[in-house]
Length: 209
Image 1 (cartoon, rainbow, N blue to C red):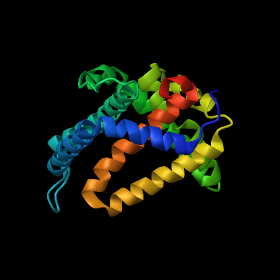
Image 2 (image 1 turned 90 degrees about the vertical axis):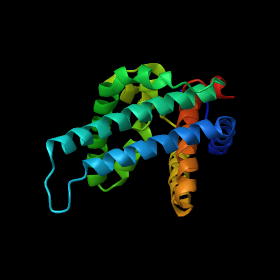
Image 3 (image 1 turned 180 degrees about the horizontal axis):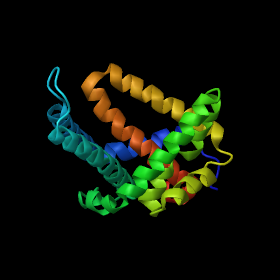
Image 4 (image 1 turned 30 degrees about the vertical axis):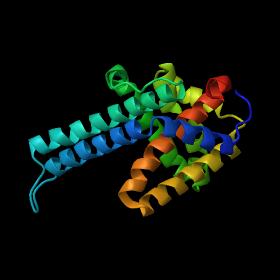
């Protein structure tokens, strides 16, 4: 486990990284949102109609693209942290990890739902301990179970600062929503960078100093 993390340092470091690649990261988010929205419109059945085969296929495509974009965008954020230029090739590189990311996400969702059902607090705790599974998959090429174990390992003893970071992220989402379109497109890459910087702080502090 890495040294004790300080959430204020995480926020400052993430903001500095965002400013370095601001237009590229925001532009990628805008571009994906446009494509995602268009596909979603085509997948929606007509009023009073039923879901067609083509609509189902498009819906499936939306899910696949969403996961691949999330992984590729996370890879771009790690590249930014490392002082590299984010590459479009990242999306092709991470596509082979699609099922790993998907199944690990399903497992986490089941665990969290069960935890939330048990008086809420266990669910929140599991989110804090296991939410870095995606970063482990993208940055360390971890497997399905390995990624969840990795997140559990690196977050041990860091629950309080990670909980504060989670609350701050929720606050950023709220502020971004209030600021409408512009705010969301800035909030989204900032949040992703916060997660990536936090992961690096937990695993290899010197890499993000």
